[in-house]
Image 1 (spheres, rainbow, N blue to C red):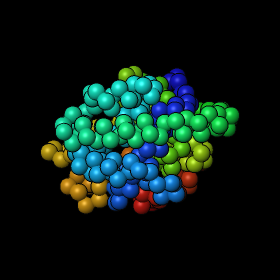
Image 2 (image 1 turned 180 degrees about the vertical axis):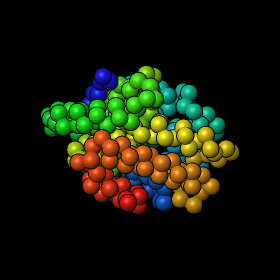
Image 3 (image 1 turned 135 degrees about the vertical axis):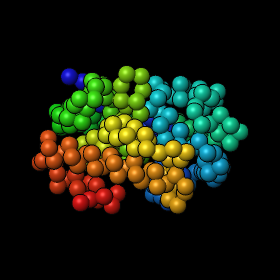
Image 4 (image 1 turned 180 degrees about the horizontal axis):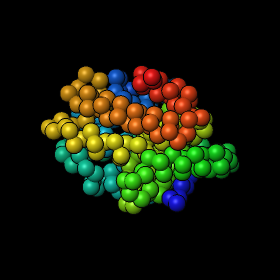
Length: 258
């Protein structure tokens, strides 16, 4: 049986906190939260973000790094796919500057919340471990071993999620504060993508995914999301029908409810 662990890591929470200050407009990758104090670094970072074709790499970078110093090293010295050109280097430098300006105050607030955070992680482990294990085993049945899963609690993600395959494991970031029911379905959705994305991509040539509405690659983004939502619906109907109503309510925010 594959293991599932729940953690809260400062560098990941800080990274998404910085991203949540950027108003990306009609972009599915946007984490913008307008209920925050203005920051002096936002305009330069937003401009650099808009100019970099590889900007989406920032959405996954903290899930591929083990701590703040490694994150800072990658931003300073590179090795981030898609961010090696001049525009990418400018974005990395602007993001590193924002991280350094925010890290002290963010770390102080982080320290104050450690007790509540520990309670939330323990609650998530109790509430989500068993149903996630069941859903993941059903999802991966016949396609290979279920990889270990690390779930990171990052408040700035709001109702969104981010995920990568890193080494021999999956790493998924969500906001556990959005509620356990939402977290369960969001984590499961992120876990579906590696199963369904490769099937969709086998049928597509010459188009890069783009999360910006109206862009050339947005149709591919929508197709990938639709395939994941549809597969999730199949698994839940067969293996966890008690979650079906909740799943349709969750899918409704994508406009993909039945």
